[in-house]
Image (cartoon, rainbow, N blue to C red; front, side, top):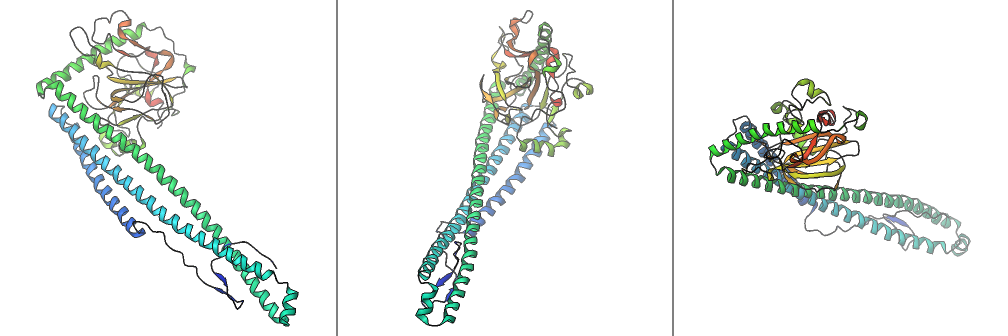
Length: 459
């Protein structure tokens, strides 16, 4: 007689000795909502998300229309207001997604409860069945023959036991499958929780973005005293300061006796750097390629000529030493590659004897990477890292803004050869003392150390 320990769904030993099939009733766990009610709430969240995404698309069209107009105080404030409304809608989308994930966790809890009840019931039934078999096995076949006096009855009973064994094997297999399903469900719970944590982190970032937007608007109104003439004077001052700063920087670059060895940096066009924004932001840029003329939200390229934008180290000291990426104020800025924070600063804190601010990089961060590159992030509204801190690829290090000589919200992203880069004040060299940026601490590089970011970013 063979005994196989498997899952039992319903073979029950009755007093007559005949095994019959009976479906075990499995009680359902008690929760506040039924599965149908949970699904209805998920559908409601998805409906709200779709409506909010339509609203976000309308805000983006309004922002694009404003961006095409001449920059005035009214249009700038209006852009900030619409950006804040868009951020609020983004936050509402995230909150709805968090609600959806919580409901999915409820669904999974129901599924786990049901599967666990089935497993418990089958284990109990299997145990009862095995006890019955052990009791039957206590009487030997010879004793059964002697007791009944009929060999045919013994064969019938043996056949019934064989049927029971086959059923027991099948039910044990079902028990193993139920446990495997339960493991899969547990994995789904872990994935849902991970998604929930990610969404909650997004929510924190979006709240920070709202704060950065409000702070920028408050600062702008204070600087201009809500007067258009003052605003235009501010823009003119920033533009003049930018030209002055570039001349100072060019003078300083020529004094730096730093040599960049070609072998000290990665080869161009191999995609060693990630774009400094989330995949979601970059997808939005790709969707707006018609507006920017490119798929990366670039508003200004490296250098001054098409040749300069297509080559890694063609920089004459004139033109643009990085790329500008047009994103709303408060957009989370992420590390393009793992590394260490070389330094951070805020050039807006520097000024000359007349009180004129140094409108250059504004709030900036420079990261040093193990491959011989440094990356620069400027015009930030907030800085979230500190000197010497280790960061990983994709980690939020700050938030975009329009500090420094920026007249519109964007991120200035630069790539430098580490060998040719120093962090210093411009006043450390002759010829720039007394200027508005003389006391400003910032990254400075020899001309050959400025690299075209597009030669190193992932396509």
